[in-house]
Every structure is written in C-alpha cells, then in structure tokens.
Length: 348
Image (tube, rainbow, N blue to C red):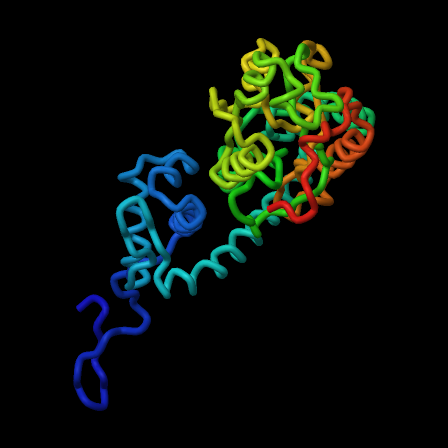
C-alpha cells in the first residue's frame, strides 16, 4: 500500500517515512504580503486596492493563510480588523521577512545597469513642483540615463503606494500623517512656514483691533475662512487656530488642495491658513494674495522611504539634491504677523 510499510519486529503497519504523505496547507509569500497589507490598510477594501486584487480573492487568501496556521489572525468587526494574539506574534516576523526580501530584490536590481534606471515618486503637488525640477537637473549630471515616474498624490495615497511598493519614495508633509509609520524612514527636505493668505485688498499690517480698524466689508472678508483639509488631526489644529485668533470667523469653503483654497482667497472670498510653498504657482508667486506670518509650527516636508533606499543610487543623489533645493528655495514675500494675530505665551 502506498505510504505504508510493515514493522518487521511487530508485524504492524506504519506510515512509510520515505513516502510523502498528503501535504498540509503551507503559508505562501503571497499570503504573507496580504496579511502585511491588511495590517497597514486596516480594511479589506483598502488592502485589496493596494495589492491590485479583488476583495473576494484577498479574503480567500487570508482564509487559506489562517487555515495553514490553524488559528485566526484578525478579529473581524464592521469596518475594522484587529489583530489577534497570533496575528501580533506573526507581524514582526513577516515584516522582517519582507524587509530581507525587498533588500535582496533591490540589491540584485543593481546588477542590471549598476543602479536603478527608473525612479518612481509620488508626492504633494507643491513639493514636486518647487523642489523636483532643479533636483533632477543635478541628478542627470551624475546619472544622465535615469528617468522618473512622477505622480501627484494625497498623503494617504502616498502611504498606500509605499506599502504596495509601487513607488521608491514619497514627498509628504510629516505633520499631515495621522500616525507614525515606523516602516519608513523620514528624511527632512525643508521646513515650510505657515502664513495667513488674504486677498490683496485686505491690508492687515499694524492692525490690533480688526472690528474697529477695518471697514465692515473688510472685517467680513477677514472672518470668512477657507479651510484645506487632509486629515482629522490637521482639521482640528486649523479649527482651533481660527477659534483662538479669529473667534468671529465662519468656514465658507472646505477644500482638498491648497491651490483651490488660494484661488478663493485671490477672488476675495475669504482668508486661508496655508504653508508658504503652495502660494508659489506654476508660473511663480501667485498674484493677488498677501501672506502674513503666523505662529504655527512649520510644515515639515520629508522624503518617506524604505531604509535600504537611503544610500542606494540614484535615489541618494536625488534626495540630497532636493535637500539642497529645500535650503535654497525662494519663498514668496511674507509680511510680519499683524499684532492681533500674535498669541500670548500661555495661549492654548
């Protein structure tokens, strides 16, 4: 009988150790990548989008992985997946395995042309537009045949692309990230001061009491705020600032890009708290807007990438060039903080 032999001392049948029995389910690398994506994406839908899979296929592969392990890795709840104790045990080991595999793949890629010939980047529009062109000029002096694949994306989408390894690095505002992402290295590129952007006709210089010193139409314009939102934590910070400094304000628009928000400002609709860099348009400084410095921590633009890319060429040269450009970038004219927007040291 296949897979069975006789014990010559007892005469009993026993499994033949030299004949393989029916294979038990085993973990696959594909399944471990799905597990890792689910941990970081939090939902089946988001993980499926990252990996380019259908949700039923992803769910099936997760089920096979859990069957191979013999226990659940996630507790399923509506719109939420929480790691079980087994999942928490598995996660750091999967991260280590994928990190080693990624480093091996990237290292072997050097043998094709000696370095990565295409650099894939995703980033926020203002950083790509103002930092990347001159940095690429420097890059091409050292690596003339390197090409770039560039896409403008929101911070959340950049993280998804990084987790799915569809880009080499992202250009993001570190303070726009909802949480710390320990998987990725953050390399500082530049600090971008926050300003209150107001229509050109609204002169706030030297103003201490807007209600008394501004004309009624100007005071109304000052208290119409255009909000840019890229996350709940940022939205709270913006709202808190307006509540403290412009307590009579009302939000007249919520935008998903600084450029859109600034177009409302230029049209005289209201005012907007924004980093200075986005107020540089594609053709130079955006006209029709005054910029007043405000006491808000600057936006920290960083390159977000896997640690193995830090010293890998030509990424290292490109990132160094962007850092140099960040130090030398010419920001638009920023006027001093109006007296009524100076916060007292004990302000919340």
